[in-house]
Amino acid sequence: MFDPTMGLLVIRGTEKAGGYGRTGREGREGQGGRNGRGGPRRRLAWPFVLPLVAVVGLVLTGTAANSADAATVCAGRPAKTVTFKTGELRVFKSRSYACAVAVANKPGSRRTMSVTLQPRGGSPVVDSGRYTRQAGPVTVHALNRCVRASATISGKSGSTGWILC
Image 1 (tube, rainbow, N blue to C red):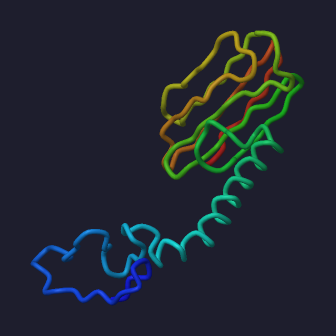
Image 2: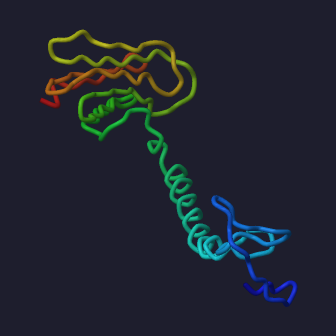
């Protein structure tokens, strides 16, 4: 192997089992460099890793900056949205669960809010209190079951009938 720092040809002896036969400043074969850092594999990865990290950062910050809904607290896809004067009721459905949240139109001072989600044949799950932005999330098991939801913000309310049947 040619050592560019010394300008000499280095001949390696027989390697021991499990070892690389390193002596002094020699690195492992295939890693290049004097101390085993910055080999060809590592140099090839940087042109691909850096743009990938930049794109992921732009996607995440761009989505969050453009929409307040990007960081939703419920898992699953949006199933139903009911708007009313002071806010909206959002219902989400995943494979086996349903989730609901009540979101105020104008976040600000604390006001009375509540959200209720009930699976057919089950007990309703309620979150109520004085909140600034949203009530919920509330989640119920809804595999092959209909659900109904309702929300109240500052005395105004909205509700769904039986949905996701």
